[in-house]
Length: 397
Ligand code: GLY
Image (tube, rainbow, N blue to C red; front, top):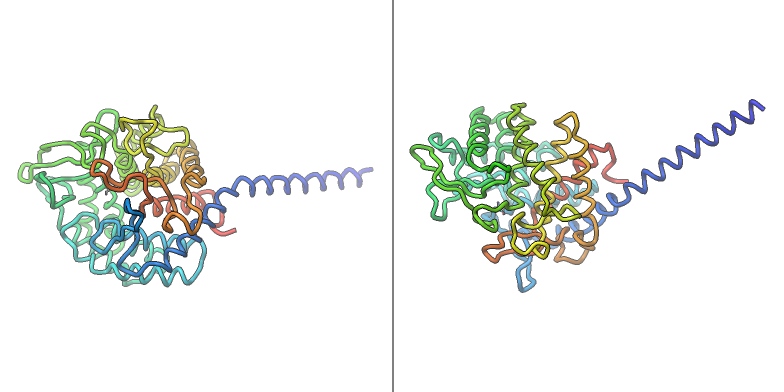
């Protein structure tokens, strides 16, 4: 009797374990299906494009908008190919990623733009992370020298653009440069890079955010006194509106700055921005934001999958920096699940070989409205890879 009972217990335990495993696999099926589709699509694209001429978006006539090495988005496609390699371990993708990345080397000397973080850290940064190629590190360190030449100590921030009517424009997107500068400062680069990051982050907290933690896109400063001159927008709906991707850039930037400095004011800032996003009454059910939280034609306004990707990536990081981070993790998971549905995720061979549909570049300029964007693909895969690591799931089944 005792033996029969023991066997029954053993069989039940076995069934229970099997049942749990099957359920776990089912729960993760969306994730692996999405990665399979993404990698297949990136492989097709990697075979299609030549180094130095990367796909950016789709033009109104259906042709692909190409990003040459002066385009602020040129680092995203190489970075996406690095992620596809990391996910699939397909060596051919690594070879492609190397070529796409190395074509961008001249950017390390650019001093006319602030976008070096996007251009170099997404390409060479991921390349270095995955290969430890010392040449890639040298490119990043040189790029940081060039980028830091745009820091004006009177203002205490890095200048964004050299065009336009502003005396010293600083855009919220500029917070995304701090990851590369901090990394460089910790990896053999000039220690001043860290001071620049802290100064830039503090100046941006003081002048880019409203009381509700929505942000201005563009703030201009006086180059002598450092005083703020104007607050407004370039890519958002209105000067006083909350441009969705800007919320994403800010959330990512302050989450990162807290992870590096442990300064509680950066954590507070990140939590407040997250709250704005997560509790906004005009956030749609699937959590992929409209391109601007104040867009006039909500619910018919276009969505911005690129904003969703950046926000998901930042929330995953934030979830690890606080004791009660499960809500951030769950929100990011919901966003990634939405982006992984057929509504947003393209079937391989369609969507001009971009991974995601439905992003907005610069609606007020009538540019890139409800189209794929290379940075939507990049931040989606960035977040998917982070998600797997946090869940302790293999990237490949
Ligand atoms: N950095 C420009 C953009 O976010 O569209």
